Length: 212
Image (cartoon, rainbow, N blue to C red; front, side, top):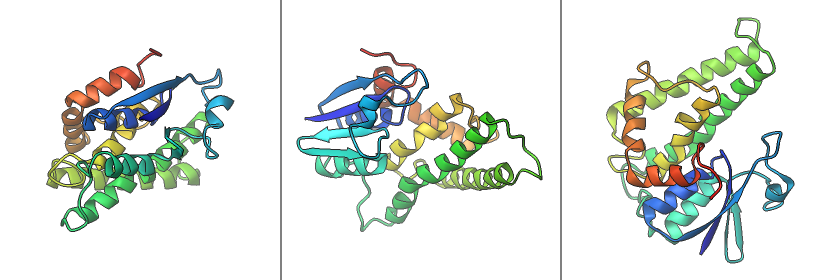
């Protein structure tokens, strides 16, 4: 059985969500954050990367969301939430599986700069460049959701599981709010949030969940 090493308020909630979507059994091991809101030494010792999420499956210890999601989907989910390589939607699926990291890096740079006291302005190269990049990424997201109900194609897939953290949890930490200025994305978030497996996973391991 897969063990999900869940760090509170982290991207490991998407692994719980994936398991609930696939109706697979799992063990959840909860780790609280330290007083500095960072992962504790105990959690960082799980994998050399020292980041969440981490799973163990027998002798396998795996980190990085995209790797974990594809591992579980292919090995235990019979590829049900992946897009086949011979599908015309496969290139979209690949792109949106990776898009999460691109958007997240822009959001994290912006949040870190603001936390350090940086102010937007023409003389602030970091914030100006990051804002331009972020705007382009949200335009791409809006365009895709204007032509497709889900990111990887007409059916819900792992690409959607990869994307929600940036559009929900990170907004609570100061990232851009998903509102009427992003109508397609706003409708998409509401559509995904209505899924029973998503609601169950967030109750178990979402940003407002507490240790069982």
